[in-house]
Image (cartoon, rainbow, N blue to C red; front, side, top):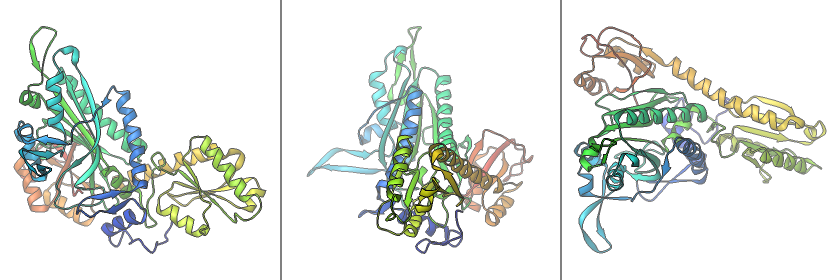
Length: 478
């Protein structure tokens, strides 16, 4: 925490974490409520965070050969019905269009909750030969899911996201793509958002509707709950058979394609808030912060102060740093609190004494550390401080994850640990879905994933007591 100070408008997170989160979302000007329940206005500051995340991931996607496309927002009911498991999985969340203008439609149209069926229909029209493969497509868009309960960034009825959909000639290629894109998400979280993740495979119960395998990255929030930050799915040839996505291979025989899909959403912004924020507001990872450095002139009416601050601004801007010079008539104290609320990673102060001594004051948002730096070393010192903030945020989040990760032998022990300390609990599982469902129904605890890094933390299943060789992360999630 940058300070022990309690900002008046923010509920202390230790008192009421949910209210703290809502207060931060509102006071940092990230979200505004709309006139339709469950639909939110993503305000410019939050959208700028999303744009930075989008730019990072879009570059990574394109480096791997993916292309961006745009699919329709509406899906005919007959198209949605082609994949039985998929439509059943999304049926409770679907919103339907039944009229066009004043005329009733002959077929209902679904507002896309996801676009698998649209991509499948498209691929069935354009894939003919092995020479057409692979198709590596991605879409940046919004989707609509009629959620019963909503919460800013974590669960909107309409939300922004990206969804990748690829088709391949072989199962091996598709499986490699699925895992590769999960790693892209993990890198985004760890290297750009300073959020440590647990990589793993979802259980059969928790996997995506229509997928053969679903993989996820799981993050731990301040309140020790889990946030599923991204998922990647391997479909095999199930969708291809339903939609007749076939091709002629090199041996002149007809084969079905193998598919993947993968996505993340503005839920990542909620993850940033709950991973790094404190009782003074947001703390943004420098690499996605819309403003990386806020320059606050002190006694700007004194000779040379404003001009000196403007010179620093120009230098940082030239160095490619996202910087703001605040020349408003608000007091310095007000500005300090404002930029703390908005989570700006660094504050740079410039006053008459600093001008005389050819220095400026640099303050880190994550820990409140104050540094006096020479103006001659401005760019290098600021860049080093930004990297230090990122590393500090990551290390703090990783320690939080490690300190709140436990092991248990039985479901009752898992429940006791979660109730007492929160966090993630590693326990063995026999692989029986009935055992997993009993744990959820009895204790309200869900499997997060089966980590790639397996450990032998026991010999028997936490539910039935039979021999078990699968280690699962259990916890309570958003």
